[in-house]
Image (cartoon, helix red, strand yellow):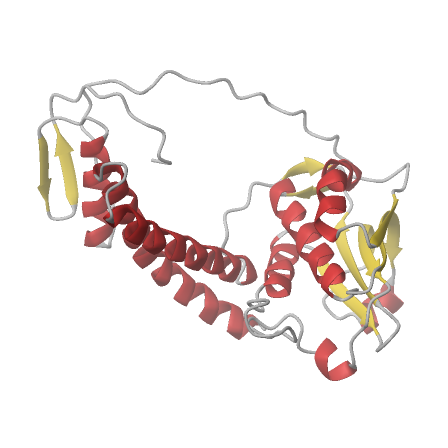
Length: 300
């Protein structure tokens, strides 16, 4: 799994550069085309395909543990509660959702956005495993994993943990399937129904947040995923409200460092479209004078 992760991460990084160029120029073309232009539909199809491919690379980066992580002290109860309404809409009316949250639950240090992705992906898998309806149970609990548990689960260090478990009453899995579920691109779904990256992304996110994940399943007996994240004594970090800032202005010299020349050219086009004046480009570096521009927020 470690070797697959390194390979996937390397491929995803290079592929992501190419997708940045494809999607970036497609967006620029859409901005330049007039509404109703017959080319708009074709360019939009390019952008749609590029965005779907970008989603795949994000999943590969998550599996290889190279996605950007912003860990903070959180309560998993808060994360689960915040997703409850979305989860109910996601799984549909035929599945009854039961949420059992420990009142004295400890805190963990993890990226809340990535933990949300883990819960959503596992819930989708449970939904697909219960086409005739059933029950999805989500629970949290404080646990102490001892040496005997560690001997049976070699990657686990004994100590205090917070457990997040999702279990369903679906079709379950046999041993052969269970051993491969975290492999990227492995799927038991019909062609076009899944990429096989959902659970591999879950695996990568859990590992990147210093946790471990285990699956328990038998054919006809449903499936349970149990995630263990190290429990800490720190208090939950307060939410910071980010206020809107005025658009950037100035006369500075701007230096962009990028080893992919085509990406540099794309950034140049984006800055020009934002109103940048007097650009100068040489050897992968952009130098600008008379810089007075209303910058749009483009993630730069």
